[in-house]
Length: 214
Image 1: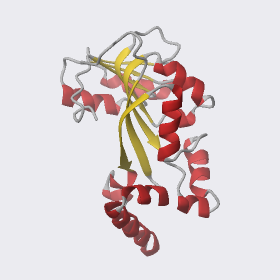
Image 2: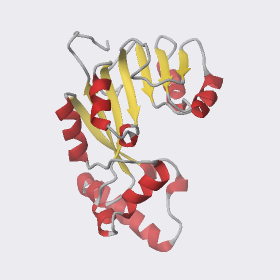
Image 3: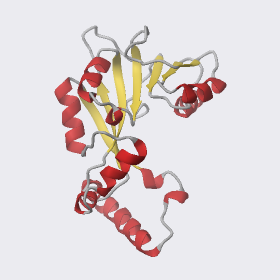
Image 4: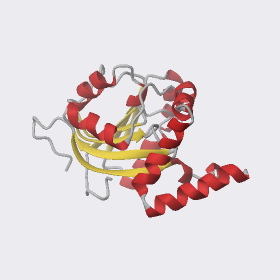
């Protein structure tokens, strides 16, 4: 998203940064001219993240919305707001603290999961603490209703992270191959049918001050 839209942010903030690996990788790719900051409410995660700090890469064990921090040019919210009980209020407050924002949103609602008694949604709830579930359409509508201006969106696929994600058992492998083929032919139908897809969204936040990421 950053490359496609030729964004040149002076500062990038990752909200819910975990152990900080994403910011560390971005720093390698974007150089020392960008200030990177990460916020997470987990002290264990920040303890790990602080081991990779540098002059332009800092981590804070704080609630981003409550922290006394300047607005960021570009903020990342990757797999975050589906965990927040009042996600509408959270996103509304968040919009006022950023110019550009990149969301990564799990698309937990799909036909196969619903037909299997919402098994996938319940799995994500019990295993990863997801409280809210989205399709592409409901995720984009939620952001638009709150006031974000959607600039671009695309899909990501958990199954393409590594070969370890590829099922080995015959029945699961058959579903994987069907899923992969359908995604090549019709991405939206594949995403609506199978698990492990996500939505990557580039949006504008609060533009009232005329801020720019360039």
